[in-house]
Amino acid sequence: MFKYGSKEQQSSLLKKFDGKVKFFATHKSAAPVLEFAFANTCNARERASITQEFYGPEFGLFKDNIMKFAEILEKHPEKKKSVMSNLREFVMLIGNKPTSLDNSVVHLPILNYMQTADYSGKLEAVGSLCEHIVRFLHTKHGARLAVLCVKYATAKERKVIVKSCKDYLTKIAKEEYGHFAFLEILASVDDTVLVKRELLSKIEENLLDLCTDKHGRLCVLALIASPDTRYFPESTVKLLGPVAYNDPANPGQEIMTSKKEKSKRQAENYNNFKDMLTKFCIENCYALWTDVYGRTVICEFLLKCEDPEIQKKIITETLKWINFDEASFHEREKAAAEPTRKYHPLEEQPAEVEPKQDLMNHTLSSRMLKQVVRELPGFDQILFDHIKDQVVTYVQHKSAAWVIFSLFDTNTVGPQVKELLKGKKFSIPEGHEGYAVVLAALTQGGEEEKMDIDK
Image (tube, rainbow, N blue to C red; front, side, top):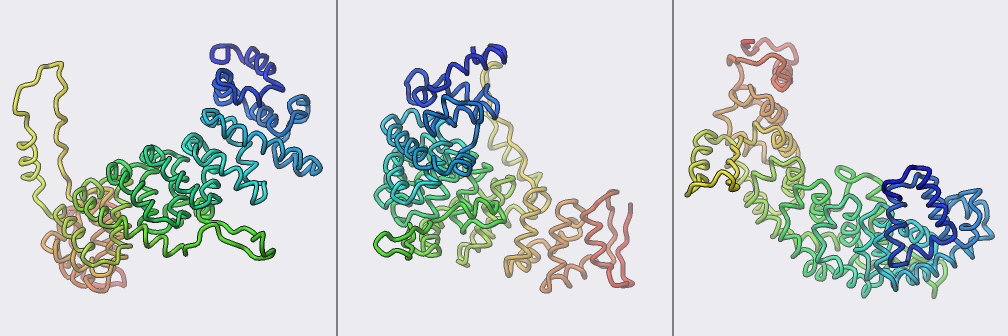
């Protein structure tokens, strides 16, 4: 009925749920039906009507004035005690029926309780939910609830949370909302040895999959450096990290839910991860630079890593993919990948080898190289020494020209770049924006020496 019925039939059937939502939400057979209706057929008003029933029996009987949780507390402050009591009772109940936590219909009521309850109430709720965090972190409200569970959990409960997540880590890290829980574990869990043993070992198995995923790469970036607004929204940065609560023994004093300093915890996680990431970046250098998400990982690691040896290894591997003979390399690669036997027409054949492109000319990698030239001391000279024989060629390419411009804009190799381009004759395609920027920079200030251009 909910799947194929008309809107009138669906609404009529939904009214039969009035006063019974709380019971249905924890019933083995009825819960999937309620979840399907809530997630697929209900409009915003109907969802609010369903959610309202978790706040008390009177809200299930009288549906004339549907209110959200905040409105109830604001307009009827006298009901706060009974509402919180009903929510607490439900949280304790659902902790014993964990399969019900799979359904998004229960996530918002529990989140409202966690956000409003006092510190002892939060601890009690976390104790009931910590073992089942993987069941509800996949939704918007469930993810925020998972973050609060990690924030307020004790060291023992955090260990339970980490161990419960390890088998689903790749899936969690790649989820639109689920990755917030992983970020919070990195931001709050003091036991970095536990994180390394249970989580980082799982990351290593699927690192390329994570780095090339929109949300997965954020978890890797958080291990490289603390989340900042370059890649994380400000709301996410504020959401993460331990919180303070009032000390019951000493009123007026606050205690943090995590004991270690943020910088120390971040440094320990990074040190546990950097050797693994170094090896990975070297082995997958080209794949990372040319991926829309992976390029941010290798770029940030190169910029944030303070170990010259690691930087040297990654730069050396990167330079192998700059100023190389693309045609002959592709022929060798294609020959190596040729099948050793004939395939049946219906049999799946190996995919054709995709030709490798010079990183200077690649649309994605060239943008990151430009950033590295500007932010990593010494890289401008290394790159210029590697490509100085091909600067004239690169400046005529729509992507590489931007990297040449960033070299020109430096004090170290800028004069040398200008000297190489002075008086040269180019054949520039019409509408070549990259070249136009370089040309404008080279000719600014009314200088008489200009390059010859064939259009």
